[in-house]
Length: 317
Length: 317
Image (cartoon, rainbow over all chains, first blue to last red; front, side, top):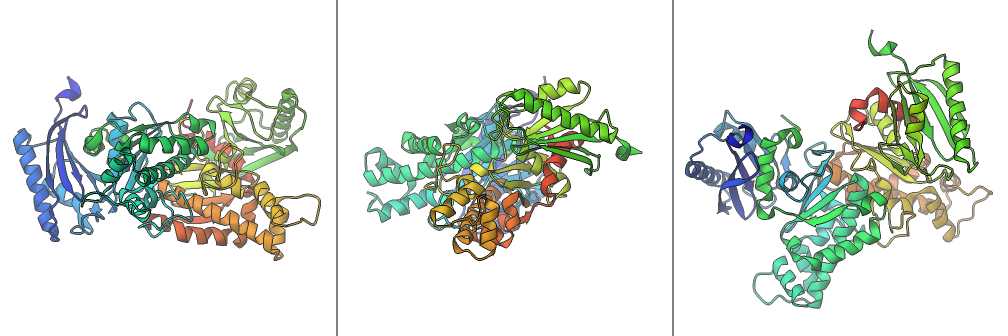
């Protein structure tokens, strides 16, 4: 009886490389999943139609014409909670009224849209590495550095849905310029492309055509000193920013996901070293910093939680 | 009818230099006030008896034997919410069971104890510079640098009541050592004694015996270049830490109180300059950074609010 028999939620994850959709049951399990490459076409309607096809196909294959609601994680920035999205990596959508369009498609259902990094953090809190804790920072370290904050057991949105931007915590006031216009933000140091650029300036030459943080991490594992130094630099910057967040927010768990978090000790050892130097207040020393648990599906699980556990994760109309 | 006729709350502020107590009416107005110097005696009972005398006298003079509750701000650290306090500046009290003692004195009343900087932030949110906003950081810049966070309209306590420690946000990973054991914390740079020590190393020689941030600020106003540079350095450090907090918490208002906040443009100009360089995300550029409005009484008003507006400011038993 009860929740197990309720309809699943349609969860959507909209990013620069792929559109993913899933049906998520009330326990947070993904029962159906599909994805498609994000079209490069600059016409916003092409992207919308591609998304509609993906959702139609998933619902048809699952035999679920009427889910319990629609939860969406989308790249920022966006106006929240109204859901006009302008994802940095999707130039076709600028102020695209995503939430309104989905509501028109599903007029009887709750439709909720939030930042994709927020959805990852929510997923990790609801069903991942932060489960059972009330004060959690979830992070994504990848092409960018994003995050979401759960404090007192509830998602923190801040004034405009932008709380959790750990990527723009300042780790070095004299540091490299950041795409936000600032200087020395965590993201400027630790994002994959930033690491690669730094390593190349130090003489690292990738062996193959595709230059990425993944390749850099592979070289670091093989013992390349510059690649190792790049991860060391990123790990220390992460540790400094996390120490600041621990002191400001009195956390219990920090869960780190995204591509770079796969580097293991090459990233986490310098991170922990910086924490030992900078997170010295007794309440900060107790915090656990752990890899995220849900992997690539965290964002979909979190998007579903905007509907399935809206009392904790949705503080808007 | 209604709150105006309710009994006032007994508010207490326990610091290293003075013990202050007040009766605060349900509108947040202080109707009676008294204070006494904090005794230097190392016997914890002497301090307790001094506090009891202060409270007895205030309640007798006000003709108010039975207030509606007791709200207390006390220097940290403390165990929260149980209220065993070990104020850094009051060596006589180590794990002193302040909340339990006050409950024994007032067995029929709610008794709530929180960090003194938290109470200042709560006061500024409830009746001061943050009034009417849901996302506020209140700060105290004085001998130390403390603060409190209100997000989504509610006080954020974090895992152990220690949220709001903006003084230990890292502003320079290579910066001066901090009393917490870390390095480059905001407090290490911007606390009054830190400023004075830095200025003295740069050749500043105070004209009188008492060497304090107040004297340094006075010299800065008179045009002493080293004193001015010290405030410049503190203001920039404050701006960097506040930029980080804005990005992490998506604030609306930052209210800055404490002795150093009295320095006006000498502190706020470099602070705003650092914000212009580091708080670049659109949602951060909208934040107002303002002087606190309640002055020395903010902590008492906030302590009263732990009782009078407990739905927003007290998340514990």
